[in-house]
Image (cartoon, rainbow, N blue to C red; front, side):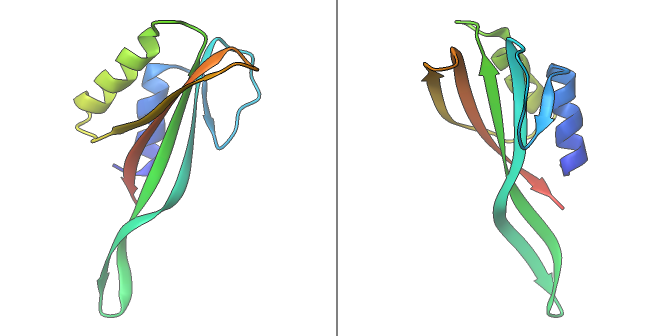
Length: 106
């Protein structure tokens, strides 16, 4: 899955999707960003395929958020492997922050 496809997948979960940072007061939103290269394919001394780690951060004020179920269902339907890295409550903002890792081919 490429970066545009990941963005569109996230938009199917919520319209509150931002790249790299967000300035919003929505009760739930997603921020996604490319982190680093996790793999590559080289041929004839050239990089032919690059795989990027993409972090998807979900922020919600709901205690049992439906957005998490919708996101994980979207990952599964798209056959996009994902890993839930952490869940943190941010006391200063009141958001619960879910952090996922997926990979994109560029």
